[in-house]
Length: 307
Image (cartoon, rainbow, N blue to C red):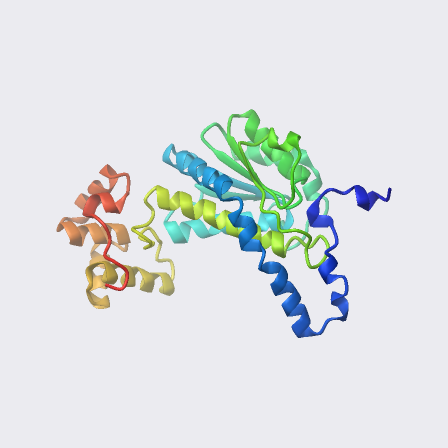
């Protein structure tokens, strides 16, 4: 039997629907890729219960002062770093709360680091370097389910009592299942280009990671309904969004919303409590602290959309 026939990873198999893609016209290439991509959301939805378990684990970890780590190599690692990097501006979190670890370190974000993913000891070292412990949650990301760097990180995390999960786009063996608390396996099938997991597998992974962090942040009170009330206005776009949120909650002008935000030193949640309860900034912060940051518990439900 040829070696390739023994490779059980779906991500490395040839796609029978695209064997002649090198003869296709530009529009045929676009149509072929789009046809493959249409199955990705369904594959992710099929893992809804496992993703929900990961959301609950992340929520529990955050409530106890722990951290979420994404660990991956190549595309998988870059997606983890991306999701982690988007949490502070979106949810006002400390950058330490969600972290991305990638084989080869920061240089691997923009240039492939050959061989970095093949060393499980590097994964273990990176876990130890972040002082991962029982209060943390480590999510390994490996489209093929077999990346040594990720396996080493998961083993090291489990050894110190951290909760663990794997996100893969191929069925995994019992040995890997034994190393994690939850397995998230959106099976998207062979790629348009054989082994190019930056495509369907990457898209599925991005959807899963988005859901884990967004779901956990919602659960710990980082939103008010579907409003991003803990965002950090680090640029003009986010400053404008802060104004729109406050304006919508109270049905006031943008100029008035800006004045409320200025009094709250830019904090959207604090600004909303100050105006709704008629209190000072310090009092608003105290009320939020007493409610574990959950705005709904301080001022009631948000206004209906479009009101």
